Length: 142
Length: 120
Image 1 (spheres, rainbow over the protein chains, first blue to last red):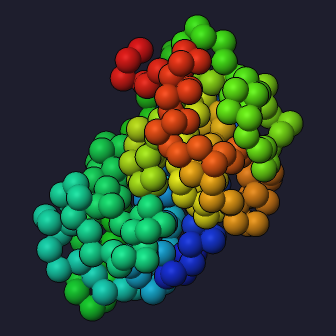
Image 2 (cartoon, helix red, strand yellow):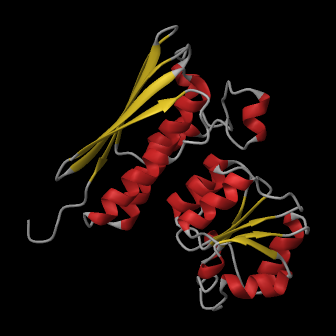
């Protein structure tokens, strides 16, 4: 199963739609609630990162029998210092964004924490790609 | 979690206004959490918890829906924005508003038997 969502930079109203969609879909096909929650958290943080920092992005979610792959690609300013961005509390978000409760420097750390595999690539002035994989628990009888 | 508290009990105890999700006030409450940083809430709040915040924009409903909270309490008297109320009704999440500040709300919830998740 494959789902794809477009996320516009600065669009905080629509944010959360991909995360809500993935959670609903996973629950409908009988995926464990905690796994669905993790996938939704990773997706939500990816959406918010695009809304906060980028101009435009897509989130694609591939649901395979043994894993969920969440891929976020954006056109944006990119990340100059990825190790810094991965630290809890590090953020380049503006004061306006922070007042809304975003930009606390928890987004990327949350994505890594709730995924089983996590990769991030970025090119300054071009954009950022994040790939997160969540391994599905083996079904009984397999 | 054997206190048996529902969102309705909280409404009565706080004497607060229900802005949305009134048909879901029988939601049982598991634990409580309070934070105004959305990513922090996303990481820490659990299924069935009540969340206390001063944020009023509609992203609190996205966070509440994704994490599966029993209800959201906006403390400090700020009114939720109209899209927040609309989305809470769509998602079926009780949205309570009280003039009491977060500290007092949490104290009242604690006295009702609602604990933090780390105390379980």
